[in-house]
Amino acid sequence: MLKKQFKIWGAAAALSMLMGSAHAGVSADQAAKLGTELTPVGAIKEAQGNIPAWTGGLATDAASVDKNGRLGNPFAGDKPEFVITAANYKDYAANLTDGQKAMFEKYPDTYKMPVYKTVRSAAYPQEVYDETKKNAVNTSLLNDGNGIANFTFGVPFPFPQTGVEVIWNHITRYRGGSVSRIIGQVTPQVNGDYTVVRFKDEFTYRNNLVDFQADKDDNVLFYFKQDVLSPARLAGNVLLVHETLDQVKEPRKAWVYNAGQRRVRRAPQVAYDGPGTASDGLRTADNFDMFNGSPDRYEWKLEGKQEVYIPYNSYKLKDTSLKYDDIVKAGHINQDLTRYELHRVWKVTATLKDGQRHVYAKRVFYIDEDTWQATEIDHYDGRGELWRVAESHNMFYFDRKVPWYAIETLYDLNSGRYLALGLDNEEESGYQYEFERTYSDYTPAALRRGGVR
Image (cartoon, rainbow, N blue to C red):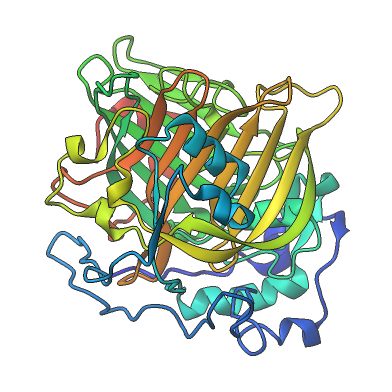
């Protein structure tokens, strides 16, 4: 069972050094709307427009769960209500992103979007709801939005007033407290040929460590470790990241262990537009998890909400009867295995600041209101032309009450290639939430021990 080790970080003491906020929280009366007029994480609760009411999300027994934690598909019997194709996508243009439209133009014969009934399946543990209500009053921005104060877990800004607050909701969103997973990444050639790079990822918030101390690493948001399992030429390499709350004051700390050299080195390139691990140049470091890291290089504009067809309840893509060849195709993943639904999203535009550098001059984010997960991101180059289209296939780990991604994709419109991350159909185990870690497990010295725990 998930160990809900939600320890308070010593309240203001844990983050008092980070004070000097630029934006205060809402009033207690406003926060009281969470769970009543709004969902407990700040989404519209009642039916509105074409989006149905949120009724609590899927039950923890919504479908079968096997001995390895693999989930059955609660929607296995569903059929598409209609299919959007290159021939008819202009009829649905009001509810499509520019990136999606570009994919229909790029791959007119194969790219399609099967659209199903909208199901607002997401939910979180009660502890997340309780902390979110506290955050609404107490959490604030730091350093022009480049950090946050008075935050433990949950949603920091359930009533966002700025684009950067929406982005922080994505960055800090709940993923189970501590989780380990074995997944595959592919970067197919134009003809569809690919090699799978297998990773073991570990992610844990500081307050989920068994030896948690409120005054230790108090600017660390979470720890992330990634071991490369295969192919043999990369196996044994390890990446360690200490993600900080205020990355302007204290930039992300990262180290890599090179198995061939048996050396640990600092890795400042694991940030912003540094190269993504084993990505063949098809993603940047901050493309991982759709977007991660410091928001300091962009101006963030909150555009409001709109209804968009986005990948949702994507259980088909986790079916263990599938082989990777069933999913990975030339140009894009097998769209017959996808499920799109009409959901309400926050739209945020990120524009590169004057004097800052990044290969993406602009990004347009579409973030699901029920989970705060970035689900569509359009990336523009320095000429202002659409370059890459990121699309995450959302699913809900209902047994743990954890929304996350089935697969993340990043399509390069120029090269005709793409990256897909999160494949685990052929692996022996799925996501593991039962493990204990200490501070010492996430130190550079631990990397020298090498190997996968």
